[in-house]
Length: 206
Image (cartoon, rainbow, N blue to C red; front, side, top):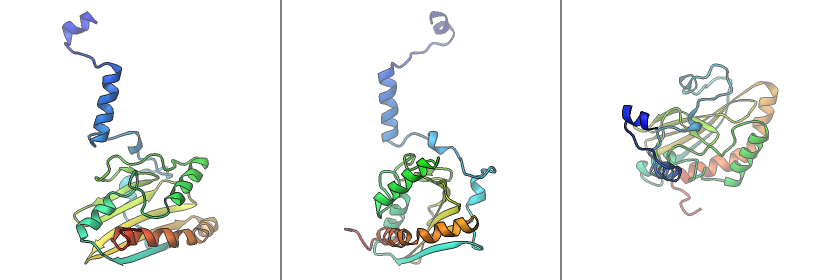
């Protein structure tokens, strides 16, 4: 150690100090990347840009269009804060259950959280979603599902002309994929309807 000091003078942090510093940086949102930021989609060809265009052909969709009850800036912050500690604005127990099922099926589950509480960039993970487009100036966020599903799924948010458009898009893989989508329809109705309304500020106290 003395020989190293002669060549490269340095001081080392103790274990407790290193852990304390790491926790402080996480709490202050200073961590640039974490283990959860690796891009691991179910496709062999994994590329963020490949998924940022949501398909319109051969897909099933749940689209919610809601007038904003708050100013666009507040609604945009609601979108940019989604997931992680903030949650998904509707039926949190259902999201947790879906994450548990995903873990049991060998998926990533809901325990990845998110890198920062209020900032998003392409490539970030948000629970079992991957951010493939995050354009705050254009008020446009696109998430791609990394959960185990018989198909491919996107969740998209747009704000324009004081209207929120929230679209869940699913490209099924065969008959099983279609059965999955329609079996989930009752949950989709309640979850996506309430989520859109809360983001738009129509259910502030709900």
